Every structure is written in structure tokens, then in C-alpha cells.
Amino acid sequence: MSKAQNFRLNEKIVFSEIMNKLDKRLSDEDLISLNMHRNSFVMTLNLLTEIWSRIQEDAKLHNEYWHVYAELYDPYADERKPTLGELGILKSFDDHWFRLNLDIEDWFIHSYILLDKFAKFAKKLVFLLSRQPEERRIAARIPDKNFDKYKRFYINPRNRNSIKDTEYLEIITSTSSWYNNDLKNVRDDLIQHELVPKFWTYDTSCGKIRIGRIRHSKELVQTLYTLRDKYATIYPEIRDENNFFSLLSFFEGRIGKLDHLDADTISKVRKQFGRNFPDIPGLFSKMTNFFSLVNDHFIGIIEDHFE
Image (cartoon, one colour):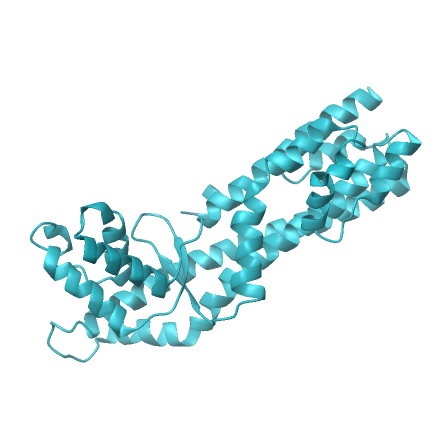
């Protein structure tokens, strides 16, 4: 899962199409001001691609560490000393464990910042493309301190009737539900204002990076090993599986086929362990699709105004 594969940027996403269309159509002062907001937005967008490449490295190390951990602390295996290769993984994890938490939090925080910067760019753009005095007066009132207040302005029933650009109103109100569900709530509840400290974790057993916020303990590992042994006859593919995350994912995928009490146990393990979040490439795709819709809309507005 490479950075280039998941984080493709194009002219629509970075709004260079809009700037090219506006060239020679606005004053130099207005173009410079608008482009400053766009450049700040694009810089943060590029930071997200770099943070994602770091997260992929983090996930690989994280997965290797917990595989070694499971091997060394398997309650059914003979006690042994770690190999040189395992020692290297353990030391690398010990040296970099803080970065694993930093990079995930960094991605969500900078995604939040990205949307705030979008709000500033979009407000300026709406103002510059407003021709009538009343439209400019309304555009000047749009809050741009953060995207949350920007979006609330368009949602507010007191403002809806005065907004002439109903198509853009629809884009803001109907195609950005991911902002609260997948970004703001994560940033607010689990990073900015968390009440119970937990650690981020990565699960790559499903072929992509799944992220959770966890507390981990040997008791949770032992619980899954007990269930593994119980169901090994029915599911021989897990007989030798020692990876905590793979086992949890396996049982969650078959929750309806487990004994009632075992299904409850898996649910309790998940509650103690932490929740899975939408995968980052999926969230990034939702964001960039939103930016593309905004770009295409304003390209049409510009063509109607100036051509």
C-alpha cells in the first residue's frame, strides 16, 4: 500500500484549476491573497502524504513487534531467549514506540487543520465571486476560523434562505458527513480532549492498515489464545496463530458463528482493547472527493461569470 497508490493529488484537489481560471480575471491583489490561502492548504495536504508514508513504516514495525511478543510470551510454548533478529525488532520498537503514537495523532490533527485552511480559502473564493452587494455582505459573514463553524453557517436554517448558491450549499451540507464521523470526533475525543490515555495500534492482517486506540494486557492475549484453542478444530487455520490482532479480527469476522458467551467475550475484548477507525486512505479519499466537487462547482461559476 504505497503512498503514491493511495494519496494521488491532481489539479482539482489542490484547486490549481480554479487559480488558472481566475488568472487575469481578478486583480493582482485579490489573486495573491487567494493564492496565499491555497498555498497554505496545499502545504498541509502534502504533509498528510508524508505522514502517511511514516505510518506505513510504523505499522510494519508494530506488526513485527507484536508477532515477536506473541512468540516469546505464548503461555503454551517453552520459555526461550529472543533471537538476535527478535532483539533487533524489540530494540527498534523500544526506540520508536512514541513515533507510532505521534504519527497517527499527527495525521488526524493535520487533517483537521487542512479543513480549517479549506474554510479560509473557500470563504475568500466565495467573496471574490460574489457580484451583488448583498451576496458580498453574506459572504463576509461566513466564519472561517475553522471548518466546523464554516459548515454550521451553511447548515443554520437562518442562513439557508439567504444563500443564493444552492448547489454549493448542497455540497457543503450533504457531502461532508465524514468530517464529524471520521475526523472531528476522533480528533476531539481521542486526541485533543481524551480522558483515558490509550495507545494507537495497527492491524495489517486484513491486507490494509486498520487503526485502533488500545489498552493492551497479557490477560487479553490469554483470553484470545483460550478461544483459539477451543475453536482450532473447527477453524484449523488459526491453530498456530499467535498474533493478537489477527485472532481478534478473525473472531470478529465470525461473531455470529461463535457460542453466545464467546461472542460476548470477543465484544468485551474489543471494548477493552479499543475501537477500529475508518482506514486513513478511505478517509483521505472522502476528503479529496469533496475537494474535487468544490473545484468543479466553482469552475462552472467562474465560466458563467467571466466567459
